[in-house]
Image (tube, rainbow, N blue to C red; front, side, top):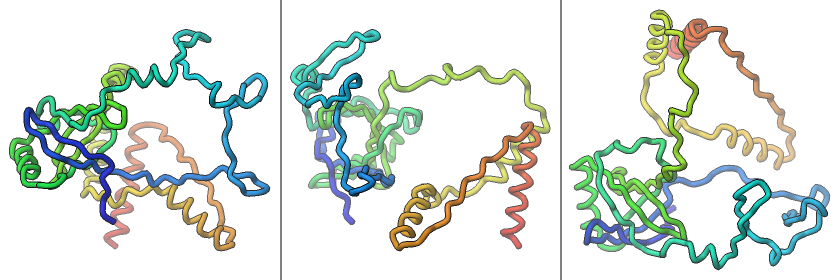
Length: 263
């Protein structure tokens, strides 16, 4: 099925502009369930209720509030919030170019494809320029009443645009617990390196499946056909008593698996 654009705009680089279309690069394939009445199988509706009286609160009586202190709220109405929204625009403005790979992956949020809209000669010339110079762009734009920052990168022969988290959202590794004080022994380090070497191989993204989703769908299909599929409880794995024993056990399991494949 051909990809469908979800938004159109203009990639603005200095005084130049390239008409572009935005496409989703990922798709939510998670399993979603309907909430039903157990007797009638009718879909159940959700209502806002007062926690003290359990009485339904009408939409006209609902207000949005931001808690500035325990039990103290600042109320905002829709008109006030609308006045604070960023100014609508169709420009994806490139603010600077940086060397490829400069952006840490922790900043990445959601990926999109950015394809040409109309005449594509200038678009693909720009793609080739980024390839030749090993550069990626830092972009800002407004889409559907929300301001974004993103990384403009080359993906194959096209551009990709990855939204970036805001600075206040990304946590520093300095907030993690301090490293262990015990030094790793040479034997443990050697075994860890052997374990890394034993797992070296080609990266195949086709192997990345949502196994839980597959099991649930198979279970649903079986029930839909009137069968009574068996449920198999997942077994918890015991933690290794020490790092050395854990590495040794992992290496032994990998060697045994490789010998079976060869045989």
